[in-house]
Image 1: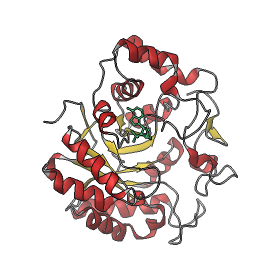
Image 2: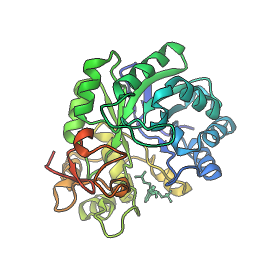
Image 3: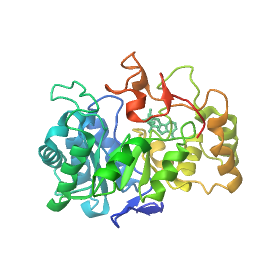
Length: 322
Ligand code: A2P
């Protein structure tokens, strides 16, 4: 039986469960583990699965859905266009559908605004295909009836302003890293005012990603709230995310944690106020993901923070409070 978790409504009118299982397994692939993870999630009541072409496990996610016994139409399924396919949106989308083995997806996202060449080299931000061109091709997918809503991921206000000015369809969601260390208050408000829901990826801050860097799951305010409810710090973070109106998609391949992550707490206003301030503590306002360190030159997949419109310095440290 499905667990009672809130559903939000996208600007297309479709409902989306506010908690989903994230299928990034830490590196591309994860095959059978991802399949088992999705099966367990569906068994314990998840009805929202978030994957991506780039996660390299769409076949296994599709297999889990088919073998779960849960009717396809009860499951909200998201996948994403990879950077190196911006120049062939329709083809890439069809490939994802075929790998998933489904007739339609509920949500199709542009994974990143950056386009890459087919052999994975970043294309400069002002060269074709621009994210505006890519989005126009994604808009055309809506006419096929094989995708119910389209959205973006990793977009800043700066890029969304361009997108909304130059295209017709307002994204249904903007999926970004979001957790108590990176609440993105300005972006969330801006998106809400335009009917764009925030989906929080890495809502647990991907514990274990960095050694010795601040992890909000160990923050005393988070742990004391958890103790009060006899729950885990992860449940506190996820309940905060949903209560503030964001969709959360934690990844867990551990059956107990999978269950825990869809058991939300009824946080008080006082709890919410304390959690809203975690990022204001010294050293806490930052991304907790490792891709900030990949290039060594402060770019993210070929673009500078300024080109991305991310208010951060090298390493993913937020420049000013928001
Ligand atoms: P595991 O799969 O072993 O449960 P995020 O979704 O923020 O990127 O975080 C994913 C990471 O968080 C995974 O390493 C996952 O490990 C871990 N994780 C998932 N759920 C919990 C939980 N309830 N408590 C602690 N860690 C968790």
